[in-house]
Length: 405
Image (tube, rainbow, N blue to C red; front, side, top):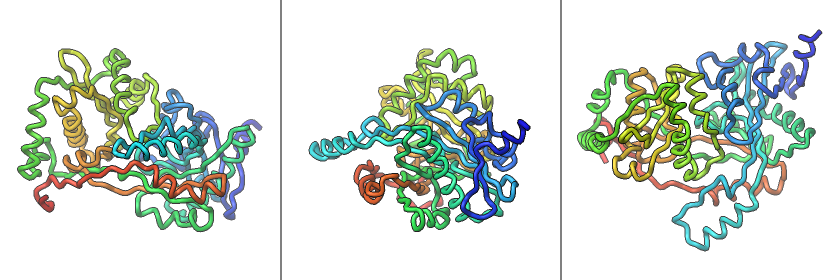
């Protein structure tokens, strides 16, 4: 009797015939149907990752999990996050704007406070919104998730939790055709996000020296000069005990960077990196950078099967200026990718030009959102385009066979 009640709880029909969905408030409540439908080759759709997020959420987040069924067979999963967006706290305006423009934008930001129900993952760069069996056409996948999101929205509102925006985060160019129904049939607005920077690793890069040898002389000299500037910095991979020992400094260094970001809706608690190490062991690396035994910077990577994610980092700004610490971190992340025999490294967003100088290339990403207020929904796209802080940058071509600058 108990098994039957769990099976049917929060399960509802979708508008497409033969499809149902079930919603859960915590990953511990989700039965084995999630594991049957989730991708086995992506750790960011697996239970340990969601357990980690629930233990140390990046702010006042609430999580939801959707399982989709076709004729009672689990065929898809989606991950949702409910969060509060306060524009004046979460967006840093461009300092290049005139004082008048800055004042005007700040006035606009004071009125932009929204509760957002997002399908996707605010803490990662990439397509981590949903996953379906390949037998389900891509446009159908978007339709099913959009349908289920409306049911989730109604559940939140029945609990007295307002939902101002429903959003999909985030997809590469090849998925735009599949999301067209969101624009034509469901009144969503498409918005662009800064491109994500990715390095396609080459099988012949067996060592860091192989990677340097693939560069033109200009960029090879730059790399060696950067390495020389960091010669007084001791670098080491921190163990679980060392991460715990340096936890407060790691958090402080992380905040140095996070608080200065163009947009930051993530506010990780001090134990986040410690929990990552506990969860992923050797698949999570925290590289610490020391001067006279003082931790002055760190960077992190997460191995996700054949891919490597460059995760969060932090550093002392004065040390960075003197020793080119950030550039050295990028080279070290490439080194980790070579050691792990990764096929690709996701370098995330921001600092696009310097990331391109170590071999990363930009890939455009797109999101979709719909305001509950119809009037705001119609003006949302030009408004967000106006407020967006655009980064001017030049794509670098560091490898020999690429077009010379």
